[in-house]
Amino acid sequence: MYQPLADKIRPKTLDDVVGQRHLLGENGLLRRVIESGSIPNLIFYGPSGVGKTTVASIIAQQTDRKLYHLNATTAGIADIKAIIDELDTFLAPNGALVYLDEIQYFNKKQQQTLLEFLENGQITLIASTTETGKITLIASTTENPYFYIYNAILSRCTVFEFKPVEAADMRRAVERALKLAMGEDAKPVEDGVADYIAQAVGGDVRKALGAVELLVSGAGADGITLADAQQAAQRSNMRYDRDGDSHYDILSALQKSVRGSDPDAALHYLARLLEAG
Image (tube, rainbow, N blue to C red):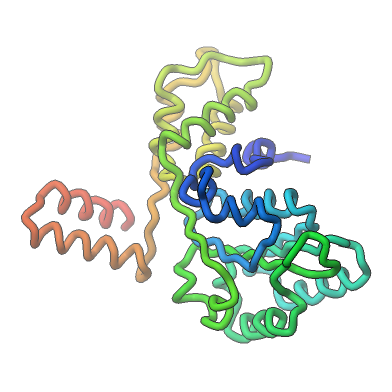
């Protein structure tokens, strides 16, 4: 069965996660919470490809909980009920972790039902890793949770914001991926390839690893060239939306740049608007 490169090299420990040092660094609050073993209900907010799913997987592994991964675009309340019923059979003695991806796609009724589970204790905070039959909920969203998630759910969860991975951290992931993907049959890699990919993907690790996988599979006699890398990762994955936070933030920045007589900044934000269409 084909396994994407991103899944092959998915980090197994917090130290292996690239970026998110404000959350997972030595003194990061999320890291300290995870290491304590007492995991509250959480909401991970941030763009795609920055480690939300990976961190949820690490939490499940480190706390010895069974992991259920649901996507709100296809899953429903019936799937969560099925997990609760399964836990009642004691198949997960240390409890379970439900990772609900893209929770913003749950409609109001679905979110209200989810709230009922939180309130009646079927999905609850876990005081230790030995509470039988308990479920911790970790939801993720690429949209501002304060706009898209029911306030009563937000009040019962802690929100952590994940940020795009900086180029310096991204380079580490790209170099590791190149080494693993090429294996013993390593071909030459032109100088600048890792740097270009790290800069071009807009902080999206998944996109960077996809570019590496494409370059390795299509490597020619000269190995992996910078020209190939420029084709494989030719468009930055800019964070943008039609009428949400990013749209108005960029418009506001453009307006302030013009008002403040800063032509370089004004051209930068105008270019972002045009590039995003």
